[in-house]
Image (cartoon, rainbow, N blue to C red; front, side):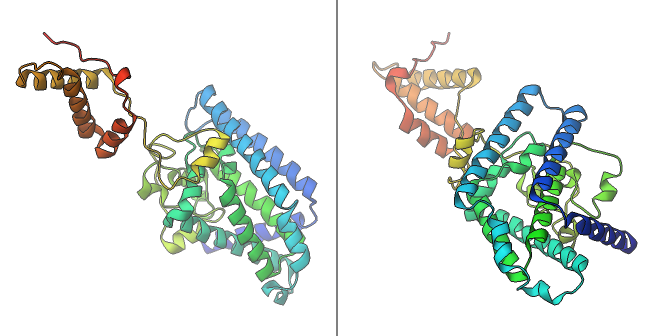
Length: 343
């Protein structure tokens, strides 16, 4: 295990040294190519089969949300992290390290650790989960899910990264390199794929196998595997889980449009689901209403009242008191049908 870690460190150091001369345009081009390649792989060899409609819905929403977020961030500042790095480079803690490769590696490791802590906090505090749940509400996990972030969460992450740059004294080259590598890893572990040797690779980095568990609908499953790049932090802090979730996303209905997601991020709880009564429930309500009316000897004018009472009682049994209050507040006598007479 130690030899594998040292090999990975050597590999990362060499890549960081090579990437140090990369321009912003080249980084964007590489990420675009990586996105297209990963999307093509998952569409042709998916771990979980999705219909064309499901894939299109997820991709369209996530890409549009990415464009919306990019426009908002650009209005705040054209390149916020690079501008911060330009003013505060070589003034922080990393200035005491002479070797540029070790400096770059340490800055990347500390960035990954910071994002692990932030991610864990987003699951631990309701005020942060409000916004983070937007990322989790994609029911069709794929490479584009990496860009499903609420604008408030994105702003907070940008502020945290800016503070990290100032404290460590990260220069523009390292900031650009870190962002490019981080985005590449995040796209990779959201991809809807599976491959040979994935579990072995998961001993070092977060793979799609590990991150699928993080997107489970079950809280005891999705409160795990917080790492962005290295699985080291989850192993070290006891938050690693190796399992295959039954379902992806969050429970209850939630919006799947850009502005619906923006609004959804400001709601403290999951929205109350819409309670549609199926035919079997309608039959139960009708039978209960008939029984109540029969006990009252079919008193004139009681049919509607019996129907409403039976309806509330059945809804309470199936969905709980909250649904009864919702139905009561939205009920309209003109839209209520009379129960069917049973023989």
